[in-house]
Amino acid sequence: MRDLKRIIVSGEGGQGIQVISKILATAAYMSGKKMLYVPNYGVEQRGGASLGFVQISNEEIGFPKFQNVDILVILAARAIPRVREYITKDTLIVHDETLVSKESLKDIPNQKISVPALKIAEEKMTGKVMNMIVLGFLADIVGGISIDSLKEAVNERLEGKYKANPELKHFNERALEIGMAGMKEALV
Image (cartoon, rainbow, N blue to C red; front, top):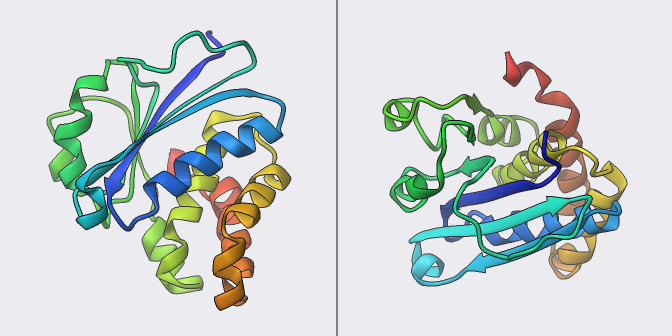
């Protein structure tokens, strides 16, 4: 099994797609991994599809671009057309069924994991931390990324937001823990 993980996080502007991608790469680096993060900017700031490309490995990473994705996170149905070209028969697809229905993915025969991140975030904390649940779950799937590195990377990245809303730090950390540990049943 190859060590390199190629990941695309996709969704809409405003969902924190670039935040998830950058924090995942930063936490991997803090955990002793090699990483690359390439953001995809454009009209996503106005609600269009947004993509974050991440590679994580124990070895040097040769090239920043890739055509085949190992793990594809889809958090908005409008992102599906943008990511189809990267899907292979071995691509694992992670989605939130509240945001991306099974129906919208029915013609993609890959293994899929539906993570109820939005539902859990709204019921237990605030919907704003849905992306942190997804991030924790994604870090767990990738493996080799410590929860401490993940929390440190999140807290560094979002320090400014915590000044305006101190409660958000606790919610983000709890959401990461739920994603890393509490989503095991989603694999069934």
